[in-house]
Image (tube, rainbow, N blue to C red):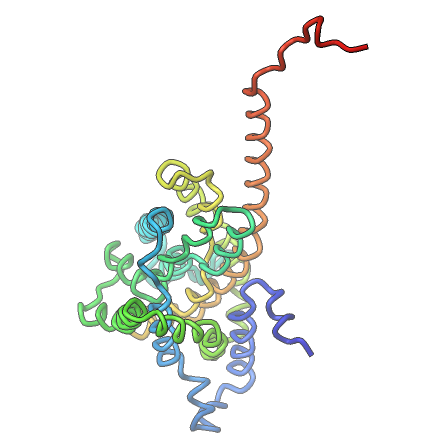
Amino acid sequence: MKLKKTIDRIPGGLMLVPLLLGACVHTFAPGAGKYFGSFTNGLIAGTVPILAVWFFCMGATIDLRATGTVLRKSGTLLVTKMVVAWIATIVASHFIPVDGIKAGLFAGLSVLAITTSMDMTNGGLYAAVMQQYGTKEEAGAFVLMSVESGPLVSMIILGAAGVAFFEPRLFVGAVLPFLIGFALGNIDSDLREFFGRCVHPLIPFFGFALGNGIDLAVIAKSGMAGVLLGLAVIVVTGIPLILADRWIAGGNGAAGLAASSTAGAAVANPAIIGEMIPSFKPLVPAATAMVATACLVTAILVPMLTAVWVRRHSTRDALREELLSPAAPPLKEGDVHV
């Protein structure tokens, strides 16, 4: 039975399927962790320690000895994504209550959900799309996108927007495992390969643990708002990313559009930030469900939109070359053979 291949056919399935299983456990057997205790409870309630190991391994995968073109491309996309998420957070904080929207179509939407859905690109999705539609350098531009992994960028954005205040020690605590992994991975390439193997296998584990903090009723209630949030991520981050890719990184915009997604790992950020700031804790279940939905929506639409974008530009470039190519010289009388 090919379960892995079946899960891989679902966009973001490696994260979303375990998350839904965890939500089922929480909904129908909320006391399962405490009942079984020991290692079973560790799997159910171990979001933070599992993520700590994952962040460490993600840091180890970053290789700064990449080419200048790759660093320029990835740096442009990274900075643009962060700035756009920061601006979106500032705007949202002026219209959305601190405790989120309570009723209507957007019930459950909060500044926390908006920030964590917009500030982190799905690096695996980006790399896969650009390997098919972009250049080798563009595909390798996910090298710096791992910097977005974890809650650090979300914390910086929320703090810079005045939505939350984090003590300096919390910033250090959030980034320290990542930095240690980064240092070890760049000191020894064997360690980078060794720890890098753990990145994907850990995703289902923290996805399941995250799901155990979500009630299925919350997912059903925030489903449409999550879909709209996913569409907003593509539009709000996609347009600036396309412009930055064309004007700064020297691309045709495809890489920017391919980066306008929500990462599966972003689903963990509301819960982690909620642990740091108790006032955010009531927002975590709805925010987690919305970010998970946004991840699924962007994972489906971004590859399709990128393919359309590339075909459109390929047709336009071919037409331009045809129009600019010199016309064939007229035949001379001596060139004609009967």
